[in-house]
Image 1 (cartoon, rainbow over the protein chains, first blue to last red):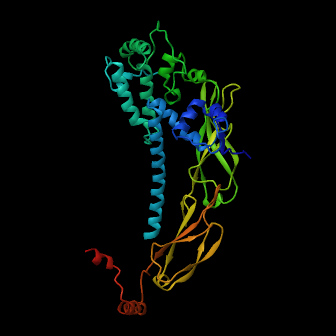
Image 2 (image 1 turned 90 degrees about the vertical axis):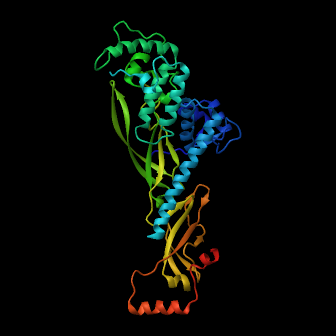
Length: 100
Length: 314
């Protein structure tokens, strides 16, 4: 049985995700990532979904050459868009159940 | 190996200045970046554009490329660099910020000093992370469950890429939610040499349920009622994720009303959600003469205007 991991430390993010502490701190400063636990950077723990959004943020930062404030807005909008799409699918399903 | 016309890819002329090249790249990057554009093919298009920009943004690399281009334009199908051509400045993987440096054979041969494989090896090290979607049934989220995960990982062997099938049994904890990602350490792409393997991320997807809809950690079930059940009230047996409950429908209930059933939602890491019964009134599709008479009698004896709001509004 392979154990799954739900949390990831800053050290692991740097080792496995290829991020630097500076990038992680920038991402937290701009609200792109929120530590689930820990008071300072060495103690911070994130959920594993953070890796996905951090990667996206770093890619956008490099690929589109935009600053962290813009990235945080883009990520926020992407997350909102994802949530709205999910909600829309859910409402559509509920509506179908209601009218059929 | 095919020659790449980077000017054409960016839609700029060969005498464009660096500002024009940057503007063209940014415009195309916004359009095709796979994080912004989910269309199939957008990622490949972006990689081409990023590769073109990687070369043309750097004056030294651009000069080398212009030399190659003059040679390349004189050739027919297939491209071979001029016999005396040597890359000078070179391209280190540290430069390769765009899309993880996943560039064409042409780029790798001309600017990295090797083919695809050599290009990959200079990146060296750790295997790539992989992500797959894993479907989970709603019922499976209530308790810890084990799942067999089957996936393919590309492996580089003797200069060739081949897919290796892997299967793992994984323990999915109770309270997992749709869209969550969990990590399996070292189960991704193989590292080169002694380098560690990448990780595998499982992207949790809840399978649509025939009865329940999910809203966050709450469940919604649509409860069909006969008109007389809605009018007179009723006791209805309603399925939950773990069994059944008896739900009391109050007299004069309206279609669309949501009744909260506490603690019958999904189990999450922070607690258990609620279930909502969404009432729906269903009229029989057909009626015999006796039933028709009853409806008729009801309509004559009831003073009820379902469209009263319309007259108030007009």
